[in-house]
Length: 549
Image (cartoon, rainbow, N blue to C red; front, side, top):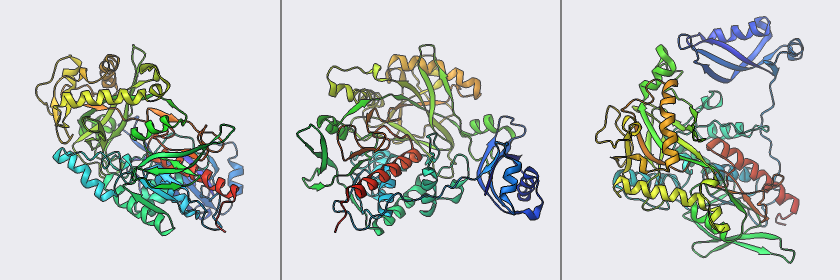
């Protein structure tokens, strides 16, 4: 098969135009093209007067070898890579000790799925509830101000990615095409087939709910076991005479111990109590950079018009997004993060007395407002500490401080503090809304957001917003709305692992994985990491020969 890239056609082209363009590009007659399919479809909107669709196509001809020889020096005509997923191991019998996966977000989901598909019958422990019950609890915060600290936007089946835009693209290197495996499994579970070829695929919350249930059923049908409301309290770690540490199992909050020499740690970026337990038990970790900031809302129509001009509203283009970055004069980077076209700002706290925001969209992306996080990068130098344990968890302490401050400024009732952009730039508290109505539930309290973040972050964001306005006219409009605070952009710690076998650098048998361990950032990259770690676990089980006899 031949992969042909950079085939460009007008936005309103006919279906037959694509085949004709491929024939012209390859210089072959119609009868020589036996089949083709769209591998990727993107768009080029740099010229708003003539937006182009950009295709990557996989084609079969009557003589692929001859065609490839003619284009041997053309970087846009190459052999199509083999992206089929191949299992690295198979269980010849159920393992004597079943592998454990802690967490059932995107990383734990794919670690558990692949282990189950290879026959290793994993036990998956999730501290939260099944996704439908979890949805009820999440809506209780949004509608009634009732927080369940074990079942919310952060904790429960599907992880934080369930209540999000459902973005399925990533910039991680993926030479083994594990990302394709993630997308194909989602399609099997009910995702739209277009996620296999559109350049920026997304699913949306409502579709994710039913898909996750279908994937859970697949894992269980293959012998996997998923236990909900099962929080891991401590880890059973033994140390031999040489000082080598070996994980032997986990102890649940109920007191039950489950023995296993292979535990995947896929806990997500908000499992702060588990972070503290790991540090207390001597599992090696480090503080890592992350970002903090606000959510910003604009009319989606403004973003569509700025990005697409006269093509705004086109069905193929959908709701427009953006990606912005500004390097401020105080040496801070300010950037947009997790942009949600046609979405809502959501309450995402998992702890009592704190306010956290996030963004969410449905598949349709047809809500009135566009929103994204506008965040400032910070490093461990910004949150120093005295003891080693405090140093590792200092980022968590910083997050908690500003989340508690947002709770106070919001009115101590889970309202979020908010401010119009014009007032924020003028350093003046807001007293009334403009044209942009807040989407955050349970509600917002207008005021002064300069008290919600460190001074360096406020200074950097105030400089960045007018700079962003030069790229998207109206971005710094007075009535645009800022809502605080966004603190859970990524994990504030990294549980370090070895590159060769994915185990903890100082605790054999523990496999740090996904976003919580500092190795992913989003649904797709977390799924990829879960697959890689599952493969490492399977290979080690087979190597040790610990299958049942």
